[in-house]
Image 1 (tube, one colour):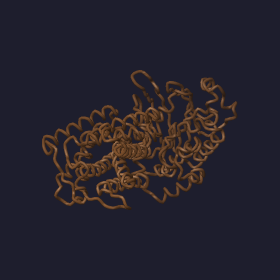
Image 2 (cartoon, rainbow over the protein chains, first blue to last red):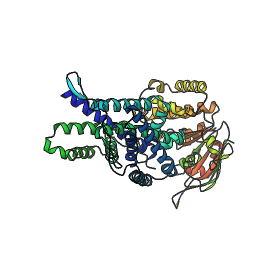
Image 3 (cartoon, each protein chain N blue to C red):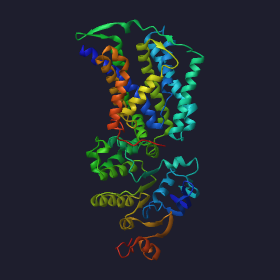
Image 4 (tube, each protein chain N blue to C red):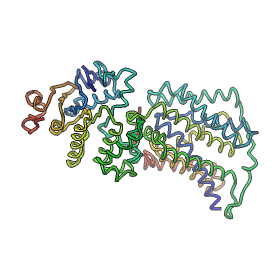
Length: 291
Length: 244
């Protein structure tokens, strides 16, 4: 029972951590609070629907292609021309991009919610050290955990990762050292696309459906997790997302059935309490880029 | 001439004039200091050289390329700037900060040799290589900032208030390093409020008065003959034993 709960809580925490890193990375590097992040997730989810008859791994790869394409195209068409704009302008532009992509999807490929039948292997349960664990929970944990490890490795061990972290902390100083905006900003969008695609694959598997507005909730989770952990710290954002996911799983397990519907009220009350004590977020230490 | 500033005007907002008609130059291998009180426009001028604040009049050229030209980016990559707040990346380790210093260099062998030289110059950086930069003291962070700037193998080094808020023993160390770099032939523009120490190490100095006007320039001995400069500084370089 405990192992089953742990796998579920850590898996959901890892999923939420992925979502928050996607929000915090663009905020750090570009000063962009990207409300179109939800539509990048939706693009990945749509690929999972479109390639639902293909092997799951093929659909996952296509989700990555679709999500990265939408992320990069939004950067080239909308955010690149606004590179020197203030954060409020960028945020409003991201609203416009979000609504434009969502409306386009609604008018064309996703006028209504589409069902994506779960893969057979995802509905199985397996015995793990005496615990009855769902394959879906294991997949969530494995996929999101592996992705978090890959992101941590890339950020910590590669030249691009160091440049991204430096740019996220102080873009002007990084730029004066020779870190090129034309390298780090598109790279950040590609990484965000990959993170969104992995997130979308897990979300589609868990929800069994795809819709034009399905990215709204994960995007909000990403924003809230990032605020909780600290918008200016990628580690903080990951921690914030993880704690949010783990707390969600914990509340689902502990709350009486008639209170489950009020889960988010408990969750966000706790979040407000944390932010009253640490308004800058749990791990915020570095400077926030304001222009 | 490596750096030439001619009649530079810089304005913040609609009415705040930060630099008013400032002209100065730094020749190859020269150590030139820019002395003045808070608000004199020293840091603004340095930021303008880096293209971080726009010019409202006049010109700034580095190796005869104007900061307002598109082609300036090729020269800008050879200018190292140690800003007043040191610009250390707190979330990165000492080693990662140093790695960023050489990010634009293609000669990896030369970079490795330069890194070794800077670690010899600043042994504390080797000792704390894997430590988070935020955990360093102010003096250690300043050493890191200077070492990182030197790893670019710069054509021009801009040092903005490198001794600000540091303990006297670290101030001595920083000025020793600056003197050492001058001996090595580095071209340096040093912005400082510590006028005595700056005059001691510099080939020439410019005394800046708010809003960014040059009150006088020359060697310490030449500045000692300018009554307006002596009155502004509150001392005569000759009386302080500065004879360079």
